[in-house]
Length: 329
Image (cartoon, rainbow, N blue to C red):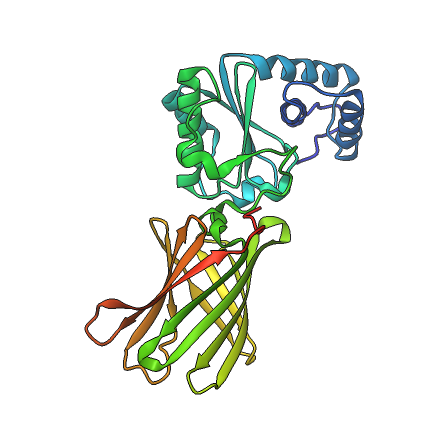
């Protein structure tokens, strides 16, 4: 924030900060929080008088409860830096008219790890949203605000806004919204498949865990290939999945026990995940891909091969089931 010349009050910066304080407390604020904000304002050199500070805080409290519906969008950092949609004042005015809900930008609301964040107030009810990075994500939040405004309650169908709902009290480390489509991979799984034509079988164990506060997903995998003659081969791999910072698309990097690193992109088609894979040894095929489809008790892994006709056909299907006591947490 720019510092003001001596004697000139920076009311716009002050109002944005006091509104953020009120929003973060859902309309309430403790004396300790107010004292912290006073010290912060002083440290930033934001020119004001004690009377102006008190007036700004009172105005913010009134502003928070005005109207039946109000969406408060954090305009601090890193929220402003991470979002990939237009949130200038003129655009927000047009969006507010379109959805029938007032929209106000604020200074930093607090949970910066979850940026971008926003709070929707409908009457006395409130709903937090986080990680709505792309324009389509923001549209999902606006759609929820429109439905809630019309119904005069936050108890409406979340629809496409569900991945962006956030509870800062009971869910302080919300997993990345971009990883919602792979949540079914979290847990401890085992599976096996027989390959009669090759006279061998495959046994697989997978452990999926949230990493770095839910920003990434790791998969520790071990696969054992057993031949009918008693020979066997075992491989381990660590896979890390996360969203591309620019596009939001899921990318994955695999670290093998042979010291090789593979990076590949994941395609999401409805509920299925697809990604390129290696063609099995001694199998005549031009390309291979894995398809993971969630099931009630885990997921199904299908290896599909393109044998030169430009069409992928199943090579094997392996049902990988969650071990007892292993949840999606």
